[in-house]
Length: 586
Image (cartoon, rainbow, N blue to C red; front, side, top):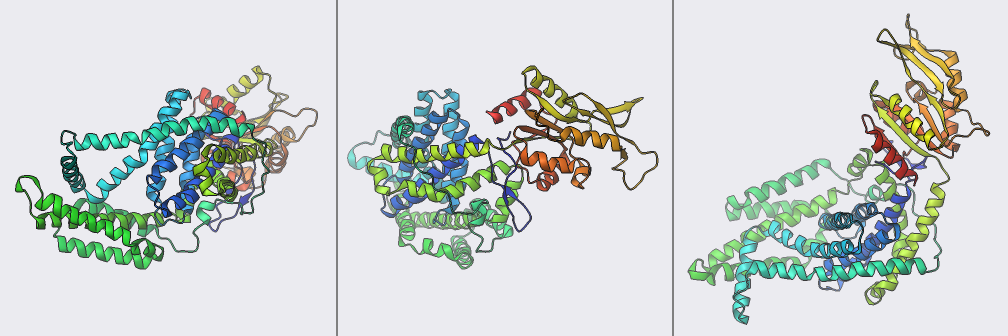
């Protein structure tokens, strides 16, 4: 579910949404590993593209495999692999490149593919090697899929015709074009195998290196993903419009006359360049239009005058090439615009608030660590000349940061939220949980509020001091409503006092797990045991379980600035709850 957390400092947002900045050891490791991967993608990737290094995507994927396998070997936790991939993909939005959607999809695919294979092989070396091979084939497969998406089925025809010409010239007509393409993609698996083996060496060397000094980050707290592009105006309406135009174009562009399609795409491109000035440099590059021109000319030649059995002419082939170019221009334009609109801070925060608070905190950690990771990356050429030594040095920085952050995290409480509707069984599940904890010798304290029935009708609640077992009536149905009632219940002074006493700090009887059943409207209004919660949440050293109705969870999190380890939603299997609890604390 979630991972270890505690009361956290937050950064105030313009929409009053606060993103917490503390997270579990697992997410800390994933955030820093993902930040290191992103540093390689952003810095080294830009360098390789600028020098036109061949197979840049395969090389970057191999570096990613080395880092992920090293992290897996160091911490023996496959979950770190996909988490680091998510962090790296989101940090890719900080890249100077205008188009980030394709690279983000590639990074996510690589991370989840490696995660699935190492999980399937139970973290065995064979799983790492096979996973690495699959990952380094991904960039070439993604490129093939991208070409088919951009140019349509005519791209496959053009490739087949071009292969036949080349194969005929060298005397290899017996080879099928699809087999040749598959073989070329398979060759990209070899770097992945080497990268996985290198990752095992990097993990060993990183442990042996002396602990490097960890410089404090000067970057502000708060997720850098949504804070990095606040200088321009974004529009969710424009994002939806670009997606719809892209889908409509892919479906219907080939069914309208060529001149009309060309005018439509040209007008769309001009609007994009006017609205997104940062894209002008991309479309001003001669290389892009040269590629489009070569495709049109090759289509005119290979699908026209050189088509087998005289099935085409130069003109028909050229028209096919122009149709492919128009389609590709639409795809490149739409994806470029969508890539920019996906950086919308409002959109990012919306997702982060929808159950992704832990991811928000991880992004904050990764963003603040990114400058240090880029510094650790050092000279790009060193990574290419001495990859094992360079990556080991970088990973040593990650180890130093995670150990420092883990020491900080262990100082605070681990907060869990047990949520559900009224009558869903929250208190019953707590009772089972308490029994299990006591059997394991764990001291449990706090308060529990069992419901009281009379002749099948709920008439109120009692309050139980969990440590002593003392039970006191807490509230009963109000016979005559008054302003001091909460809903249909009237809270009794003795019950409220008993609850407050049970939550008061006790140096002689400090529990390891503290339960508060429940935190509701009374506490949100500053009454009940609100004052005791302020003290407990700020200073309690163990695990805290807060029982909160589902509808009030956002208010409770905001009122006490809580970043929970996990939110358990009832109904939830007890075994799943216990497994989540033990995972979080260890």
